[in-house]
Amino acid sequence: MSNPAVADVRDMAITHADFLRLLACLQPGIPPTQARRSDGALRLEYPWEGHPITILLGAELAASMGALSLTRTRVELDYGTLGAVQCERFRERFDRCFQRGGG
Image (cartoon, rainbow, N blue to C red; front, side, top):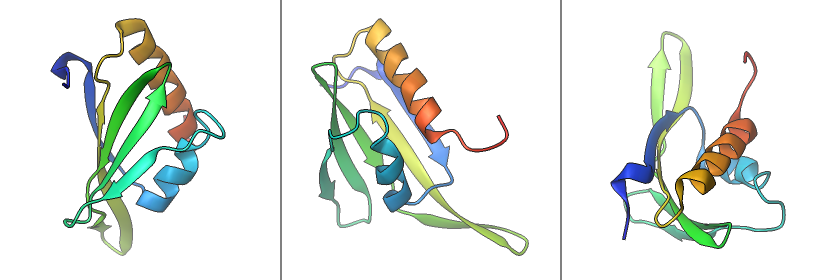
């Protein structure tokens, strides 16, 4: 059962393939289980410190800003039964793995 107090929703400029590639840096050698949905979303179960985290990648959408086009993906992170300290460790590691230039 999900705990809404420990969930994040993010809008990220990333494809599903790039997300999976970068997710591998969290815990090298520990891949998530994957299930593709008919609406184009991708559901991942990722183990973290003995607890599963559910990650839902929404369908890849194109966002245009003038001549520039980016792929946008809604990312929902459900921490389930993780405690506050475990959530914070995951968020810090996740943010480092997915950080791009400029900060």
